[in-house]
Image (cartoon, rainbow, N blue to C red; front, side):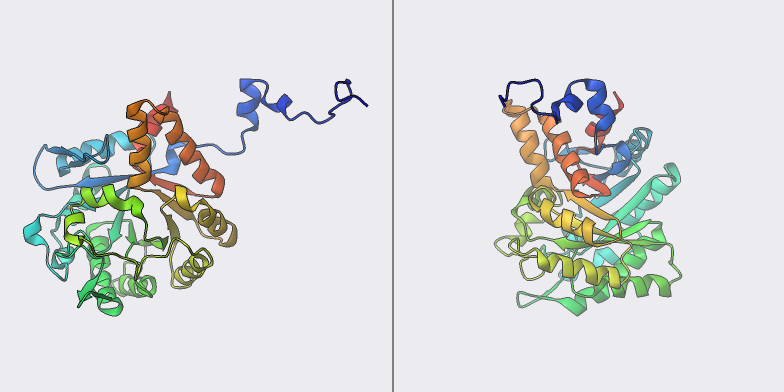
Length: 333
């Protein structure tokens, strides 16, 4: 039978793609503003915005501008913000003491947001790298990151944030056992409604460079690395072990980070566990799209949408992305 005969082929998948209305009707996955979480870098001062050169379109902002941005995000349908502080060098210490101060930058930001935009969710990182003079996520002794000593501090940090009004504490440090310890610390303070988003599969990636520029930790870290606690990019089965442990310890949600280079991990996590799995579209992934878009090499807006839709397709329940505002505006058109 000739392939040109009217009977061949009987199944023509292009029929479903022939019209815009049918493509829209039959789309398997959709991206909504409610899928997005906006990470924001905050700094001291008033009415000040400091552009981050390695992250086009992203700035460090003071708390008065934070409130304005939160209101805009809420109007666009973005449900939550993730706060990352930029701490003055004079407050950075080997033990990250500023992280435990009830009036530190993050705690003041939480209170400002809860007063001005009470119905937007607030997520705060539980980690010491913005506060340490060495740029590591934990307590360092002779170049070794001490697991249990770090957890003791992280528990106190989580309680301080929760008491300030943080809705979700997000341990991103990758210390063993920290989720269970933080859950116990929160519960002991009757903070039973504070959720835990565990950065469960956080890889020792080279995509974090612009973020470290943003929080001013790159020069402190220097030639040091975080491979003794963040995951090896070569490993995937290990990620499932990490996630299973965090769930067993009480994590309400888990995270895969970075996103684009680890879609296989995201898919396996979403397929294997009945908890919400989030993904972080990290600074390097964002910056590459923005830089190529500025050069005219790609359509930056469309590629950004494609990346985020890939996360949804792989099983992400929500996506942390620096493009959240731009994408939400695009989706609203």
